[in-house]
Length: 402
Image (tube, rainbow, N blue to C red; front, side, top):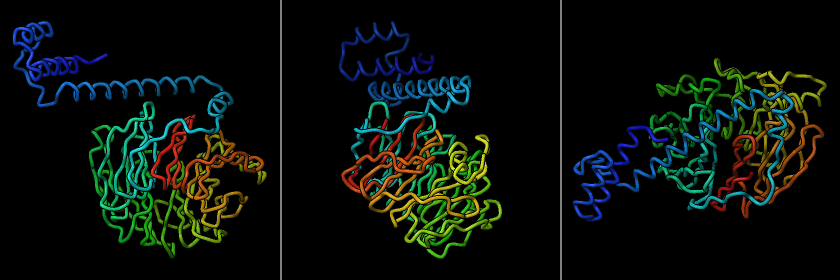
């Protein structure tokens, strides 16, 4: 249902449209009288089609919010076993939607935390905003002057991007993706960004200048420059409790670091080539992996217990919080470029330059599914709720798997 302000604005747009179409003045007067507006009223130059499209987008977002609230209410009433079963899903061929619109390699993908929106980034410096229900391109953001290297949404809906132009930008998705902050300080390519949960008031960034920076989002102030890596820091991920993060890169090491102090807690070394990606195991996955070590962690435990790294050595290694290797997953035929843990706690999903998406069973641990996802290198992956995954590729396509 439209608000009174939306209804009045739409009525004025209808009258303006009739004027633009040279409809007889008598007819315009009758319509205006029926709608309760003056034929002289203006809508600020925003025509009927644009106004109607804006209203439809707004209504769609309202419906998304209502559906999200309903899903949360349903999950709250389910017993724990049923809640886990509700997301016990794996991607399957073919892809549900192929998003076409990028003119260069796709470098990153991210789902909005509430809306049916997917964003994707490209080497040409743009960010595309897609509707995951219709497959339509909603807008293109001319975000950076060089390749966009990372994207992440905060729980609030803010979007952060980073680039080879040395900058990090924060965008307000609720205000037509207006650029609300630009963070400058790194001395080389910024490779990855991530908001720190649970408040998302801090932002982490990794760079080719061998450092990780901690930023205060609202002020744009750099709180801390963290050193420790001897080469390009390519990837990072914060723990779910917001106390620690894991960073990794060209020095083949993954470091567990305390955010407040910048102190390294542990170093995980075991890959034979550059580490491209890292993912923190959520509580459900930590419980499953813990059984491999004879541990029994609570599903409510948000501490960093385990994490996974993917490397150019074609392997995935799962580590514990001491930097000790738990297991190695072999199977990819080329660089491993992206990792996501399945919320059911049982699976890890990876993408690679071998063009595939692979699903790993964490209980065994073994490869259980392989999908040829793209015609070229698969560069990125994102989890989008209970039953959706997005992938991006050198082939300039973004695909949605449901």
